[in-house]
Every structure is written in structure tokens, then in C-alpha cells.
Image (tube, rainbow, N blue to C red; front, side, top):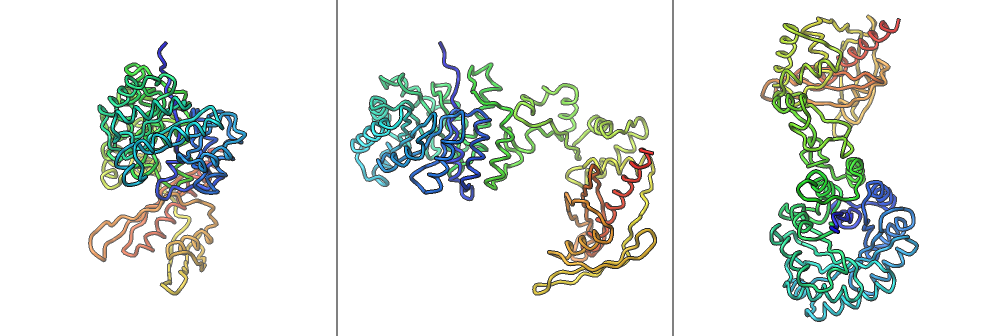
Length: 513
């Protein structure tokens, strides 16, 4: 019977954490491990227990507190490392010790100062030693892709005979090419007599951008475990991306015939969590989990998607835990997408009204990277409905002071319902001081979602246009202001948005009466 299930060995908490700046504390690691269990990974490499007290504690906590996956600790081919791994894993329902030593001549000569036979002997001894603690032992011949193949096969045969249940073939420096790496896995299957007694695993790095491709070639050639990380994080350029290899196997099961135990709807939540705790943001065009992965701006693409999703989406956003596709309205968007968005906002425009609104939208889209719903509402109100937004709040005077040795303060005079009110306030910067003072005068509880500045004209005396996006309760509005003084422009934009909030609240109250 064909074994078509590929085991997912997640190394986010071990190799992934070795990304510069990606360090996690113990509580964060336990939280990520719980999400990995919900995701359905087969093995969690919880850390390198010998490397630090923090890593030891995280392995121990995950081993005791996280149910479902096998919990694994990395250990060099040294008794002290293996002892630490076992002491951290004790009590786990499904413990695994993962030990390693290099087999490439370049590593043995320059790093380990060992002969081939010395490295082989240590590998065998330490696998047997680990097997004295646990039944599940994984062995990795580090830098396997640059090792002499005959010697590599000799070491693999010996460690399986010593008790290794998984042999992992690392492309440690991301040097392999997909066709060659697949051939290496096939060669191991064909030339290691006892290979059927162990699972073949692969651990590929992304130095040439080939980690996923190499892992896929290995699976096709016979590997049944892939070592990977959420968002592809890891040493240098990172590891095989979990979300990419999983969704390739799921989406192209028709051609490949493989699948995993992963609950794919938990992929996006896992990605967001790892991004949050590591501080490593996901690039917008990242496959599967990037902000643009299911976002469409081209008018041709949007038109096709609105008629039939499979025209431009090979998987559904819901299948990876994203609520829905996004139609990004910008300068490339077409009339069809614009009309659909109008309908979603409650506006049924046809004929000349639709033409006028769409024309205004295209003019605005040439100036802005993305057009928001609040922009569209403003277009309809200004161009079609001719709605006048009353100015309950008006800026009369603004004075701001600050400097390198002085905390920024703002003095604001506003007209509110026809009466002048004067207030002074402080902030982290001149604009923050102005905004806090305006908020005090108006009594707003709104939250600033977005602040952007664009120069309307060139030169040092350029007129600046400020756009702000505010939210208060269920209402979200945009405000705009222009002036040669960017602080004044910022205040005008903020007040413009507050007036729009007031208008929205007024309309809601009238509709309820």
C-alpha cells in the first residue's frame, strides 16, 4: 500500500528561532506550540535543550503541556546534549531525541577536526545512547547535500542499525538543486539496505530560494517527512516554508498524490501568531499568508473573480484561515469591481450617476495607492448625492512649540457650535500634541487608524495634503486637509474627519427616530 502521507516536522521553535531578531521567551514558545498542535503538525522540535536554561525550560514545558504532536529536542552527538534532551523531555507522551553530526568533508576537516570513521563511530554511539532513553530517535548527517554519497549511505545504514527511526537529510547551506536533491534521496533509498526501517526526512535551507522546491523533489523521490517552519523563518535565508509545502501538496494532490495531516484552516492564525511574537513581519507578496496572497487589483482579474473565483484563485482563502478574498480598489480596478463595492456599501448607482462616480474614483485612484470605502462614500456624497457635511468643529487658531530640549505643546482655538474654546496640551511630537488638544476640546473617543502625508507641489515650500482615518464605534471615516504648514494640514484633516463622524452619528440617530 502506498504511503502518501507526509509528516510535518515543525522547527519554528528551534531553527526558526535562530533567525536574527526572532528570539522568543518560554511563554511565547508554549503559546506557539499550542497553535502548532491545533495546526496538526506531527512533530514539534521544541528547542535545543543543552544550549541554554531557557531552551531547556521551553522543551520541558512543551513536553508536559502540549498534547498531540511528538515533542522533540535537538542534541549534538554528545552524551551531555542527549542527557539534557532526555531530562527536558521526561514525562512527554511522545518524546523524540534528534541528534546530529556532519558528514561532509569540508565540515569534518575545518569544523569538527574528525576523520570520516571517527564521525561515523560517534554517530552510531550517540544514536544507541539516545535509544537507551527513547524509542523514537532521529539522526541528521549535517551538510548531507555536500557529502560524498557512498560515505553518506554508509553512515545512514549504520545509524539505522543502531536504532535510528528517522534519518533526516539536510541541505544545511541551501546548496542543492531540486533534480540533484531528488536523485540523492532516490540514491539513499536504492543503496541503503535497511532504509525501510526508518522514515526519510529532509531539512532544506533557502539560501538560493529553493528550500520548498528541494523538499518537494525529495517527497516525490521517497521522503516522507519534511522539516519546515512557519513563514519559512530560520537561519540566514530561512527554512522550507510550512504553509507553502503543505498547500502545494494539498492543492496539487491531483498531480502529486500526497497530503499531510495539517488542519489548513489554522495556517493563517499560526502565521500571524509567529509574526507577532517574533516581530518578523511577513512580506505582502508572500505565498499563502502574505497580505496580497488573495488580494486582486487588476480590473481584468477582478472581473474574472467576480464571475467565477477559480478564474484567478487556485485555492480558497478560507482553506488557509483567511476570511475572504480582497478586491483592492486602485488605479487598475475596473467598473465591475467598483459597482460591486458600491453595492456592498448600500449604493445602487446606474447610468450617468455610475459614470460620474467611477470617473471621480479613477481620478482619485491616480493620486492614492489604495482607495478605501470611506473615499468611495465621500465620492458618492460629493458627486452624486451632493451631501453637504456640516462643520460643527472649526479650526480658528493653532500654535505649536517644541524642540530638541523642549516637550512639544499645542495651543488650539476652535469654534464648536458657534462658540470659541481654547485649550493647551502636550504630546510626544507637535502633531500628537495638536491632536490630543483637539480631542480634549471635541470630547472625541475616536481612534486614529491611519495617518499619511503627500506633497501636492514640489520644493521646500510645497503644500502638503494630510489624510487621516478615524474609527469611533462602528463608524470609520477619512479626513483630509491641505496647507503649506504640515502641522496645520494635519489639524485640518483631523477636524475634517471629526465632522464626518458627527454627520454619520446624526444620520444614524435620525434613522432610528
